[in-house]
Image 1 (tube, one colour):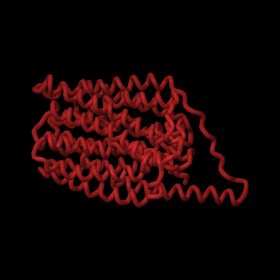
Image 2: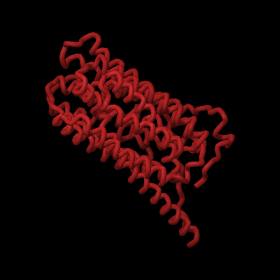
Image 3: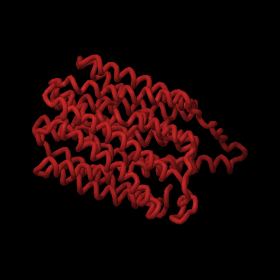
Image 4: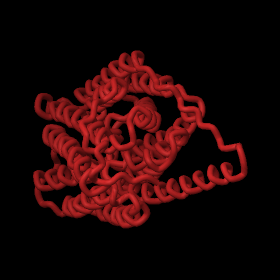
Amino acid sequence: MPNPTIHDPAIEAPIVLPAGVIRLMAIRAARSVGQGALVAAFALYLHALGWHAAGIGATLSAALLIGAVLTMAVGPLSDRTGGRRRFLLLYEVLQVGAALLAIFSTHPAWLVLAAVVGGFGRGANGSAGPFGPIEQAWLALLLPAAQRGRVYSWNTALGFSGMALGALAAGAIGWFAPHAGAAPYRWLFGLSLLGSLVSLVLLFGAREPERAQHTAAIAGSRAEHAERSEQRAENQRLLKLVLVNSLNGLGIGMIGPLIAYWFLLKFAHGPGSIGPAIAASFALGALGSVLAGKLARQHGLIRSVVWMRLAGLLLLLAIPFSPWFMLAAGFYALRAGMNQGTAGVRQALVAGLTRDHRRGLASSLQNVSIQIPRAIGPLVAGLLLHAGMLTAPFVLAAIFQGAYLVLYAHFFRDFAGGGAD
């Protein structure tokens, strides 16, 4: 597979973003604010309603699992049928319905339904949740391969910046209504509603690029053999991706969805301090995305991921042993900068694993191989937290993510000398 060198002029040249890319990035920014608010506050809201840890974890797990199933269906379907815009419009309509349901009802059954449909608390960094692979494939069609690393990193940074603003908005509950119970949390669903309405407007004006017609090689046995050989090579790369992502997803699920609740249990802090702590993690995630993009151009995709994720792994182990909230929150924010900052360059790698006509499949496998194992994490972590085992989720997460790091470096080492893609 082509692997540009560090000094490739196409990589170093300034990038002029197509209008379609700018529109997709604006949609991501609109969504991200509500997502960030609910990462910081959704578990706290359920706790304020009287839910216990196991119930909160099970709800988050169900939302992740249903999202993973949808991801596996919609990515390949969009490859075959096109119409990416229609799929994303459907996603935004579902988000509007979920937000309205959560605003107007506190009944557990309706809240579970809203959480499953809306993906509340999952933290998708402004992406379209289970429909995210469609968006990533659309973005890849608009960009030359050599630019994807940088643009994907910018896109990730933009999402984290919006999520940081949303998490700060969640913190406002603790500043202005610290003793008002669960009621103030409900207006945060309005941020999700507003983001989806803005996204709908932007999507209505979007124009999909023409689908590249993939023509199977049928003009002779040698051409057919080449086609089959290339597809086998792609399948092998995708299988490796699924394996390493499964380990990563198990580690992410142990910590990310319940970190705000863990801060509450460990240090007895509320949204006034937890919201800014989560916001700091998203802000550093944005900075980490920019850093990862620069490292990828200088040292290659794989080295940048391995170095940053190794630093994040060490910070992860430091969090549960921190005696003070500010120290634990600082470690968590730095860890987010290292871990989440690599998301854009990892997406750029996935975009290069297959040819254009299978890119929706590749993006779907990238997401679903993380999300299904990630769905297990909140359930297990919720049970551990309910039993008072506040350190165990971090230790388990470190084991899974350490194994991920070793295998990721081994499986994709052929990309290590590359620049942006």
